[in-house]
Each structure stands twice: as structure tokens, then as C-alpha cells.
Image 1 (cartoon, helix red, strand yellow):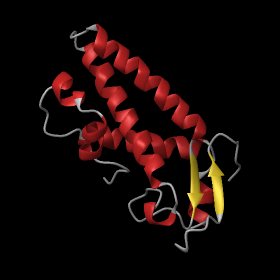
Image 2 (image 1 turned 180 degrees about the vertical axis):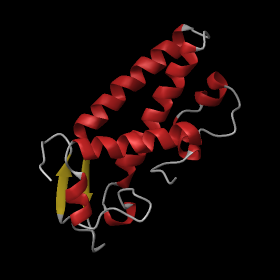
Image 3 (image 1 turned 90 degrees about the vertical axis):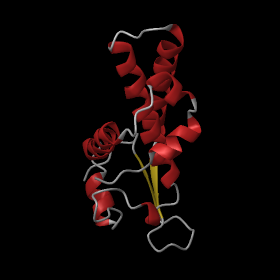
Length: 142
């Protein structure tokens, strides 16, 4: 499955993740789950049919990063969500300590804020000028 972001991007943002969560090779299992949740969120908000009609969904079933002006917003959301799940998972395994708890709660707040403000800015022709902005917070009908 393809994703909006990578482990390398996430580790640049959060250098503590390897220290606190161990030396796992990758987080693809969690990242795949989060990608599916992002897409399900877009479907639930009735944006998916609009994005499909505008030609903004690629062959991998993702919002096509080459046809939007803000692909980093989806990548940042995915990285934040992956990190949130990983930190909360660490808490549930019994290795609870205050810095990890604080980090997990902060990441949850960030994710919820990002979801409230998420927009997909279409630039299907690649000219750098947006054709349309699809705001997730507004209720859309497909």
C-alpha cells in the first residue's frame, strides 16, 4: 500500500521516536492503517466523490500529490497520526512514563486540529494556480 508520508520524514520531525519506541525497522503496519483512516475520513466527509470527479485520486487510491498544491498537509497529518498511535501504544504496553504520556496527548491535539483545518487544494493542470479548494471541515455532498 502506498502512503502520504514515510518513516524517514517522520524521524526528521521526531528524533525522539527511536529512543522512546525502540529500534523497530519501520512503521509500515501502522502507516498503512493511518493512510486508510485518512481516506476513510475524506469519504465520511463526502469529499471522495468530488476528488475522484476532479481527477485527484491516483491509481494507488490516494489523493494524487502531483495534482494538489499542498501535499505536505496530508503527509504531516499522516506523520502526526502515526506518531500519536505509536506513543499511545507504548503507554498501553505498560512502559508508562510522563514524557511519553505528554507527547501522546500533545500529538492527539495536533491531529484533531489538523483534521479540522485540512483542505485539499487542487492544481490538476500543474500550473501552480489552484483550481479549487476542498475543505474537509465544511460539509460536502458527493
